[in-house]
Amino acid sequence: MTIDAQVADNLAAVTARIERAAREAGRDPAAIGLVAVSKVQPAERVAAALRAGHRLFGENRVQEAQSRWPPFLEQDPDIRLHLIGPLQTNKVKDALALFDVIETLDRPRLATALAREMDRTGRRPDCLIEVNTGEEPQKAGVLPADLDGLYKLAVEECGLPVRGLMAIPPFDDQPAPHFALLAKLAGRYGLPVLSMGMSADFETAIHQGATLVRVGTAIFGERRT
Image 1 (cartoon, rainbow, N blue to C red):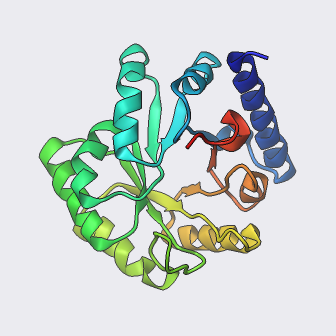
Image 2 (image 1 turned 90 degrees about the vertical axis):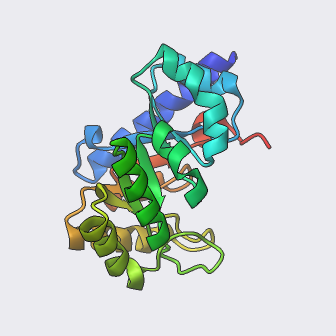
């Protein structure tokens, strides 16, 4: 099977699973976006996804995205890029120039850096606050107890376009309670976007209200290192 056929088949299968999970949850499948996680994938697999008609992608690292996406974007301005990995403050300028959504706002210093650069350039991509629902010390994301302070700083003081929340549950935990917690927190602020669920658990996330699911392996196969 060619790479084009393999990636197209995988995209169709994931889309069908999204639609089935949405119907089971009594939701409109069109309300759920599929972020194809292209990090550390060969360019030919990304190109195959584009040829299959997909236009929404997620990248973990600003530098990798800068080396991959400009030629594709020149050919197709409908491509939408989400930053789904940690963002260093010294990469804010580059991130805002490239990405349409920053999913990993997680600390006050980053909020102020994003606000400063948005004011300078006038470019204002949507932002999601990443929540460390498992309170894992090694993982990025604001702790649930600290979310209120970061949200108020980001929205009320910095004026950031915060549209929702994002989370990555602990690897060894059942994901559903973490997704339910994220949905509850988003509801507290009336935020419409919930980015949660990956290849192994996105159906569970959809049942808990996900509006964005981030899927890499089920589309592209195992990541290249």
